[in-house]
Amino acid sequence: MFKKFLYLFYLLPLTAFAQSEPITDYVARLEKLENFLYIISFISCALIIFTFTYFSFRYKRKTKDEQGSATTHHNLPLEIVWSFIPFVIFMLAFGWGWWLYKDLYSPPKDSLEIHVYGQMWSWEFVYKNGRKTTNEFYVPADRPVKLIMTSRDVIHSFFIPAFKIKQDVVPGQYTSLWFQANRQGNFHVFCTEFCGTGHSVMNAKLHVVPLKEWEDWLKNDPYKGLSLAEIGKKTFQGRCTACHKTTSEKLIGPGMAGLWGKTQKLQNGKSVVADENYIRESILNPGAKLVEGYSNQMTPFAGLLSEEELSGLIEYIKSLK
Ligand code: CUA
Image 1 (cartoon, rainbow, N blue to C red):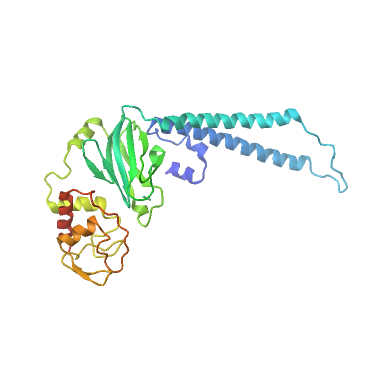
Image 2 (cartoon, rainbow, N blue to C red):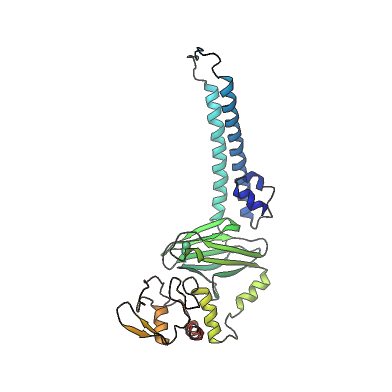
């Protein structure tokens, strides 16, 4: 709380004394550079204010008809000093920043790789063994992790505030981020590129856990022992809640309660009964039968859901009354 209060007022040099142990080495190194910049800025600011105030009094006109001296000339040594000192400081900050930047974009060779997909408006994480998760992911502590990221629609941005790392996620190409957390914990992930109506809910959770726990988690089948409707509920919570409510209320898309078996009025004047095939089509190819009063904003889920998840979603929607 105290730390947040300090940040609020940009008294950042003082936060050096209020910080908990940094979560990654990169954060520790970056904070040293940040503190250097804050202290330099603070000293410069104090010097400028001090000399400004001092000169205002020292060279103030003392009598009404006092003339200013017209014989002010260049002072070469002085000019060299006040150009050279800032130059050295700027080069130091540049070199220091470059040294950090270089490591930020050079993930260690033995990094654990995780594929990340951004789409309006959720994050999907895919592990090498095929394990998939939405809006949350697990990594082991004390191991470098590399995220290989791309987008399925528009530009998003992957931001882990506690780790002080952020990277644009762009359709049609891969970008990456890497980190090595030195202790366990849960951390927020935000989308920081305005990507449409659901941008503010495009968040995820990062769980850093001990290696053994992570290995068990990775092998675990997330749907083991669940009924189809329960699988659907899980899928719905990960994929759909940014736009659809489980009540009949409208969010970005229509609410789901009471949808099953209802006759839907479409934009083209026709109508359709919400049965299995209609729901399936509306998930895989949302633009095919647009409901009256809604625009075509949803990302097609064709290829993104397993048959089991699709059937699960349909059973779950059936259960929402
Ligand atoms: Cu994705 Cu904002």
